[in-house]
Length: 299
Image (cartoon, rainbow, N blue to C red):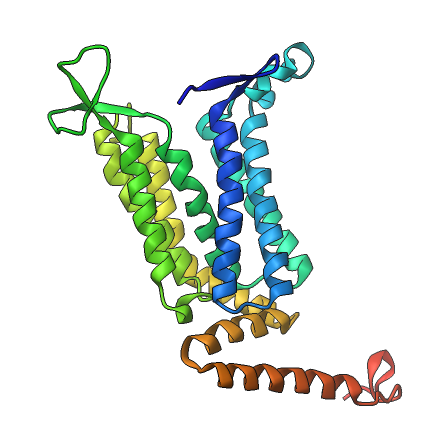
């Protein structure tokens, strides 16, 4: 696949187009997964929209990072930004900005729940599978029959991109087959980050890279990814505690996921009817303005 294609008179990196298509794919696959978990449709749609926006912001920051090092590109060669990327610093900055937006947006919407961590990790790995697999990355030389040949037909090189895509695919299949009771607890996000980090860390030994304090920069970043994955359950508990102080909407969403894992269709229907009846009863109760609201007597 060519690295750059021409659209009219504009040169565009093929990776950018594949990344956009990968995000669209991740959106619909994650939407299907939320449907299989029986998550409330309104909450699920809001959750997906916020997380996709976070991914888009991360991509835009990654693409526009060269402006921080050379702002003159904006008025001298603005179209060149379509073919430039921010490299590793741009990836780190983009992920940070995307996470900050995602947390603030979900908190403002009242659905900042551990399920968001699992959904974000799942959507990210679905988007990474085609993005990492479709572009050749040549590693060190190998005698294996699936090695890639370059100009010299006698030498073969490790297809690093296929290794990385296969590792991401295995982790994604694991997440798809995970029990429903594990979704909404942060363990899915933990397993995805740790599994992907370990898989790609192993792949780096078939790649070329300059060591930096015994390891390459990519390996250090993957170790940080594994460490973040190990902290996901603890972060999920903190999010659940903070959300419990502000709203019960997210709690209902997690309850729905857990109920569908071990109940029959009739039981799920009855549970939903009970929740609706409880909300209607609470809404129909009269409010005494003397006893409720800001004018209630101090206890």
